[in-house]
Length: 473
Image (tube, rainbow, N blue to C red; front, top):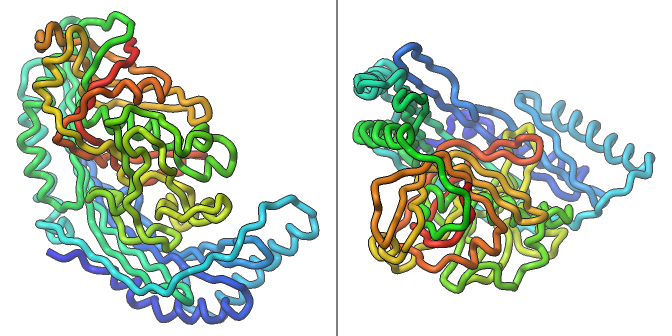
């Protein structure tokens, strides 16, 4: 079924158009982003059931204006009296601009945005609309999953959760009229259990531009989660050292996100906080390594027609056969750097500023098979499951928490596992060691990515299986 545009945004659009007309008389540039996001989160366990608003729900507007080399913004969520609202915005923003001049605060002048005239819209499709499915039906389905997992001996708790979001946005200026409406769903299964005199947890996630049909995927994953938990409980500690490894698509995505995700967000270039700025056009990975980011690069939770600054989403090649080609940027950072914006200007909400942020970030596929990759390793591990990660964009250090390592000896999986596993290293060393890339790939979009003062946005990451050399501990 087709995802419908927000009726509220459709109804308010003429008033926003009038607001822009009034503001255009006072400022050299005016745009308004209009946002309406609604959704619900469901979670069922053996001890508690919860239903609540989705974490990114919002409804509101942000106006951006330009005058005397500076951009200012004003967020609001009521626009009944357009004339009064326009007068308030003019008064507040002109007062702020004058105050900056009077205080003599040094500022970085920005050029005027040169917008092309564009009118475009996008709506997506989902199979089953959660807005037409009762909460009772969803909770009953999640309870069946929870009960199935909890029935296994040694399981203390098994939780199943699902979130659904319906995103509608308008971006309006004197030259742009953009509209988009899409929906996505996220699922989660988590098991807590005991064994081998230990207690541990394992989980699995699901995501996509989908509706309630995501529950069907979750039905078939319970045994996988229980098996992973068992393997963690009976795993050995890893002996620290350098190893040949194969990363599953989840771990590959974690490396993409941490190694060349934040590190190529180009607002960090403006602030001189990213080493990648000095390596554009240089080799940073092996010749078989390619990496992309972009709202138009894949179909996942961070796929859209336009970003929160009205720039159309792109398919951006970051690494091309080992060479760092470009970063990803919001509009203002791109202007300051003299580059073309890539459609990566994203806001946590209409009340927060736009930053350069990742969308769908992934290594592209190659031509190797997983079987051949395993056969090529004399002594190493298949790394499976993403837990968390962090990076240092200024010095290219990386640390990734991986769920489990499955031992490979003489080209075969031995059945022995190690956990927990911490992957560390220097980004170019890791990427230059990539020697095999599988033909199949997958992206994952559950959770969110933080930046700065924890500016959370939806992202996805992933890729194929990679063979590389890393330090484990």
